[in-house]
Length: 252
Ligand code: NAD
Image (cartoon, protein in one colour):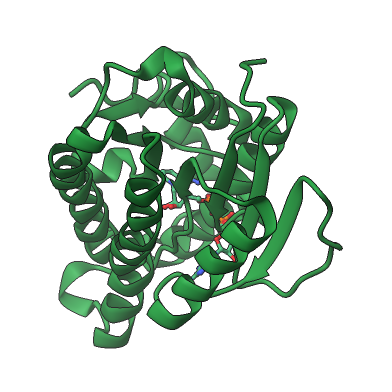
């Protein structure tokens, strides 16, 4: 494991799926971690882990979450903007409420958390790492995913602007673009997508596998390992990038 001892990290959406794998990987590397999620608190906070219930699209809750992190760990070094949701429909049928919800969590959430944490990083004056969970849907279009695709293109746009503006403070801002990862989100997408397309979820799973050169979908750890690289000194000369972790499904 990389050595991240002495570093404090914030992982949004850290209670499940990819976020949980990132939390575990950061703890393995010796970092201290604030786990931020909408899901209610189930675990007690410890010396190395602080659990904060917050909605990333609510600015007051985001500011309180960052303040609690600084009070608990005395600092922040790493932010992983992982919280995200997907809503699905044919573009002509997208509901306004679904559009708003998707943009609020996936795009506004990244903006609010990045702004709140970047101010702390700038004040500390010791650099930092911001890692955004975008998606291959931030680079290409996928049927039924209009609002999600738009929100992930926004994440890559913010990644580039924040990277340019925060470079003078030695704060690296990069994005990871996963392909198809086996989580609750993906399983729900296959069910809804199946219903809308008149297919079984299993048919879509097979279709997914056929599109991946490495021949399998990802497990959350496949994504977490690349996030750890971007949180470490090994990526000090990288900023503003969107790194595909797709088993070769996306190459642009
Ligand atoms: P998931 O649904 O399994 O977990 C997401 C977590 O985020 C949940 O714990 C949820 O409670 C939390 N969350 C949702 N809204 C929140 C909010 N407003 N504030 C705080 N927490 C909130 O999803 P996942 O598959 O692990 O996805 C994680 C990230 O990776 C997302 O940004 C997603 O878009 C991205 N991604 C996933 C895939 C995939 O195939 N699973 C592919 C590409 C990108």
